[in-house]
Image (cartoon, rainbow, N blue to C red; front, side, top):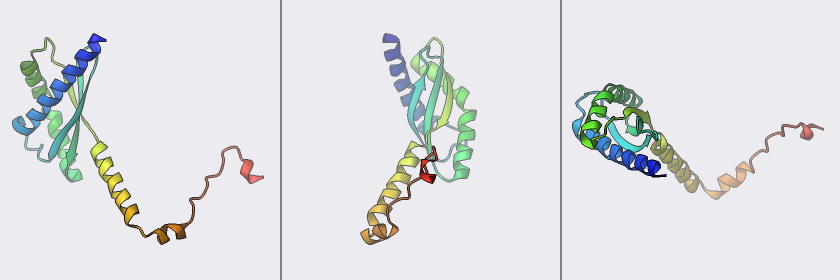
Length: 139
């Protein structure tokens, strides 16, 4: 149990340091879109860390940003080793976190539903029932 709590504390420290690094220390010109660190998962042995990032921008900017993030993984690892004074710095990997984009999409859809007049919803009728898999409907 204590090992799990330590991994959580290390993950939070990595999240803070990664956010600081991405706002202040990244010198790679490909990392130009708005990047937000949304979370970090660390293995129980603290050897590997997945840093979840949300990148806002066009598809081209996102692709370029992830190429840049991939190239600074080693620099991020050495910075973590210095900042956190860990015996073994975890190998880091940046992973796309699509939750913010999904939340924005859901919000947009909900706003569209709210702005649709009730008559338009009633005219479309109830949703069609999918056919059952056992074939009982076909008899």
